Length: 297
Image (cartoon, rainbow, N blue to C red; front, side):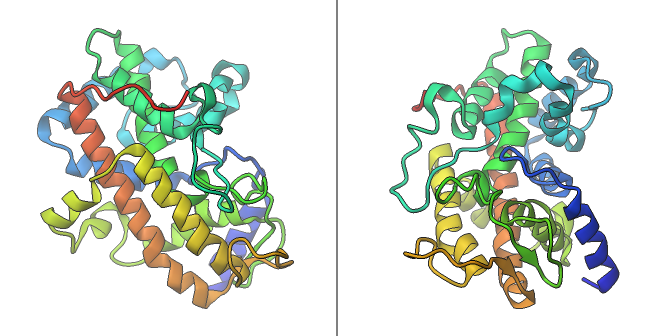
């Protein structure tokens, strides 16, 4: 990244809201969605397209969802519509403390977490008796939330820091009003996904059918635990140069160029996992494989 790019990134970071429900910036969500779209079977792809052709039913002209890429960021876009979609605020994340044993039951009370909502929306999408608008919204939320779950700081927090939103941090030569969550959501994500071979096809390059199938195994809760462990073992330690849960918290946090280079393949793998797992969930839903009800809430 050259100095002009770093300057632009810094300007963007200055404008970022410090919201605990902030999600992958557009590039992360769109890439997860495009990987899934490339990997689903033809029947699923036709079903996705048929639902997206009815996107006018959403009545959100400022937040289009005509393509899977647009749909992948729709749940973030509609946050600007105020009370209309405020019920979904807590669905984008599950804050499980990395300094305690993994246990989503409390954070998922009432089904208000990303784990429960992924399971719920896959089930709704699989229900062909629902009206098209309900199934369309289920598709959109499913695409978005699977992406969210694979950003480690959407599955973890430390001492109530709201997934790193309250952790001031620097990125490369950039300092100022940014935080650890925003770095992983956008600054690092954009850098990692665009590193050659970039984008959805680039991330899929070099994988094999066997390796892709292996990444698709597990449950939604398994994937949440995987992201949580990644936050505990990698995200926090690389930012603070200390264990995730030391007796005294380091005063400084951030990523220098060496740490960024170390984390690029980690983040690329998370995006790839998200896209492949989303593809399987979509294939299962459109085939009518209704999953069991959520374990939490």
